[in-house]
Amino acid sequence: MADMTNPYHIVQDQLRRAVANLKLDQEVYELLKSPMRLVEVSIPVRMDSGALRSFTGFRAQHTDAIGPTKGGIRFHPSVTADEVRGLSMWMTFKTAVMGLPYGGAKGGIVCDPAELSDAELEALSRGYIRRLEAVMGPELDIPAPDVNTSPRIMGWMLDEYDRVRGQNSPGFITGKPLVLGGSAGREAATGRGVVFSILEAMHRLGIDPHQASAAVQGFGNVGSHTARLLHAAGVRVVAVRDVNGGAFNPEGLDIPALLEHVARTRGVKGAPGSEDIDSESLLTLDVDVVVPAALENQVTEAIARRVRARIIAEAANGPTTPEGDHILDERNVFVIPDILCNAGGVTVSYFEWVQNSMGYYWSENEVNRKLRRSMVNAFDTVYRMHEEHGVFMREAAYLVAVHRVALAAEARGWIHSHPEAEVPSAPMQHMAPETVKT
Image (cartoon, rainbow, N blue to C red):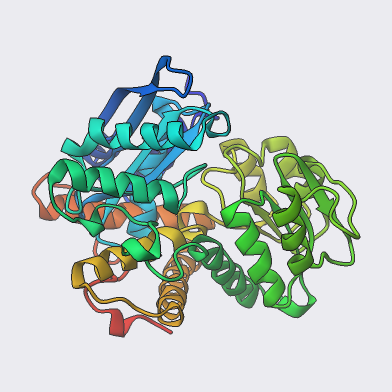
């Protein structure tokens, strides 16, 4: 029996349902049910102590039916082969729902970066690229930051790739420092995209942002920018939580002051004017929006039965279990699925890749404007599918995404399932951006 807390098994089930609902041939499922490539490597690192230690790394590349694969690299003790397999598949459907010319990938190294010195972290980052550079590149597979990785780490990885290849290849990796060809607006892009999605959902549900409240679980890059931008949009953010504790004030947190507190103390706990709150209590607060921005499997069946929010905005990948999803659907909670909600990061990574190819760079305002246009357009496509076909928003997003990947696979001659043309598909970002709805 499949473990439905395993990301790989979860996304396979989501794919299976989408193929059935689209009335596609089983060959579509057979083609997409597993990554086309999974590479496991051993990375030896000379530690500061002089001892040699080997770390295990992975890279999963799901499908290149639409274009080169794209996805982040995470450093975490819990990284597994199945995790990166599942996340690579989610990346395929995320890029497809956004209309990006990519397939999905994901990488990871089994490690705790908090236990490594800067020198050890750099050696590990460079070693990962040396082991995998043969199957990566601007037209093959394009990495990016993920859990516990950063622009600095992307800069080391870019430099190692350039050393091995003997050329400058800024488009090899995204989320890198601006001075190395990074894009303005990339750091906040995922959180900004989450907020654009929330504001679109509020508009559809008749919720005034200035009268709305929200809670954010997770206060890393994505959660902190989400909270900051929700606050700027007039939403009352009443609770946030990171790995070490929480901050709750029913009257609303002073987010700028909270960010200063985090910069000083490296955590949200103890922020002025707040009390601690645990994850379960945060997820079940009586607020308009709950934003899971941490790790997978946070909204379980038990939590879903107690959710009081009108909107769940999935800033994390896979934060809702299948059982929790079913309960939220039954209770008519409006879920903005992860493959749509948190796609702002990969969208601006696409913009970065395009800018690297052109050698011409946009201002942050221009990047943010393009991101808003892309997020609103994708949300509208999924919402129309949701309304026209009477399906849950997650199902709607997968119908849009799987249909587009199936069309590409058929066009290449890989399958012969003839996807039905009347199913809406995401407009290609790179083909006709001037036609994108604003």
